[in-house]
Image (cartoon, rainbow, N blue to C red; front, top):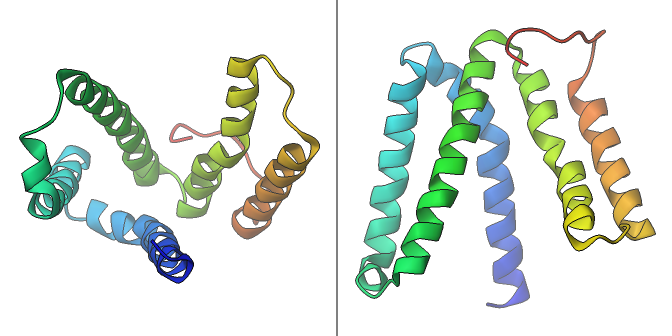
Length: 146
């Protein structure tokens, strides 16, 4: 993949992720949490099946089990996100979910038993501050959906 194609793909991912909270909030007005997740996962499966159906028949058991574990984890995260979006402002949910940018390097450092590098810490702190400035506009308190 060329650099320009990768940048276009990254821009598409950013656009899709940044609008997903808005569309999810709209969808939750007419669908229940698990119904909306069923629609999202079904559409995602169908699109990926159409793109990669030839590769599905050559998967190893280890790959299938890993995919099931990852899928279950994603299901749990989406359940928490959609439940939070029903009772919490979109900006707050966005802030809480985007703190993963900060936690991932910290978890990696703990797993490797090595302190993160100074650029990693600076990047995580900058990302957290940026997300906070974009999403936290009023005094914040912990509520049921958070």
